[in-house]
Amino acid sequence: KGKRKRRKKNLRGTKMYASKTPLVRNPTLRSSLFNRVANREHVLKSTYRQVKDSATGAELHILGTMNCSNLTARRTRHLIRDIKPDTVVVQSDEGFWDVAKHLDFVESQEEMNVYKDLIDESGRVGLGNNLRTFFFRVKWGILKSFLNILVGNTYDHNVLRPGLEVKYALEEAQKAGSKVINVGRELDSATYEKLFYEKRMDPINIIFRSLWLNVYWYREIMDNRRLLLSSGVRNYTESVMDNHRIAWWKAFGENLLPYVKRVFVENRDEEIFYQLIREQEGKVTVAVVNQHHMEGLEEAWKHYHGIREIGAPIDPTGDMNISEGVDYVNLSNARRNYVKDISGISTSSLSNYVTAYSMETNFHYTHRFADG
Image (cartoon, rainbow, N blue to C red; front, side, top):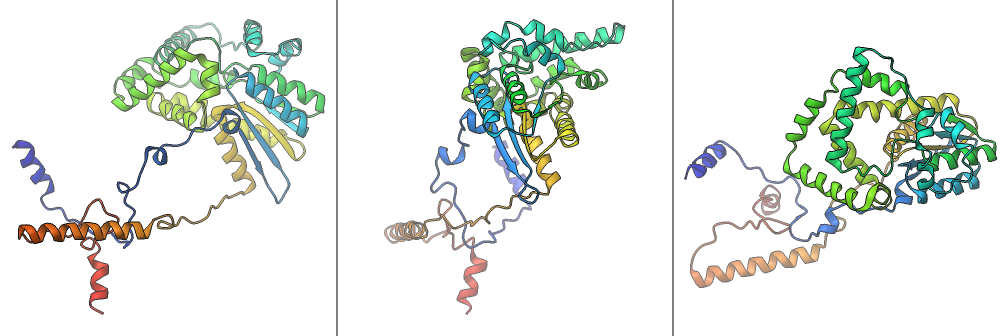
């Protein structure tokens, strides 16, 4: 009774307006789960983008990597070998190449992980030894441990450490005589410095923010956690890490730790793009970057070259089955009239909420034809 009173109070004073279009798509008449859910792309398709400026002839090939896939690593090696680009951009530094150039016998990411200590040591960032640095390391360690537990990281691969794919890209660039641009590792000195001075990177606040996520976020987090724990990082990235899953991880970071996410994604996208524009040579460029930088780098490059992709206009009724909708409405009217005849009760409303058209809600169109 109390709920009915509150509902009447909330509806009091409201007005119902009819639709402004005579043809209205009905989502409940003909729909399926497949049409509402985005399709999953193959990893080789979702981790490759090619954009070209027809006016200048400039061409950019963007290869997204999670630094743990042998499949995408071989794809990157063959692509650079075939197109022989003028410039190759990689997310690494000179220290990584000093180690990787001696590992020409390594042919898999598992073999590459054997030398992870040498790779980490070659890119170690020094922040000094003082009290503020100590507290930063404690906060950063708590944050990483909490996130690894929350998402179910199996620690078999480090997606932020340059891996086999970057090594193959550097080797093929050396063979092709391409210019190499090292834009730095994901956690380079500039990124560490931004995190060091980011006062809003508070692990306690982030833990409390995770407690305020709604039930739908928790369901999706648990789904990803089960996938990671059961398949491992490499199988997870090769099977489900497409554009839609990357967008989910970005949205997850925006909800849980927005300031840290902006340092890792938006700010890093700008740094990679500006360094690419300043140092690139020739017309053809290949960029091997972490997968969450693909979208930002592509959009920045298009904006710089003035490329606008204008699709075909959307026809809201182009794929509607008009005859099927009319038959459905006529059948509903026949049933309504039959019930009216046998019961002797007048019709209270001519609207049908599960049909594609409604004479009552579209009265502002129908009365014009009736008036002549």
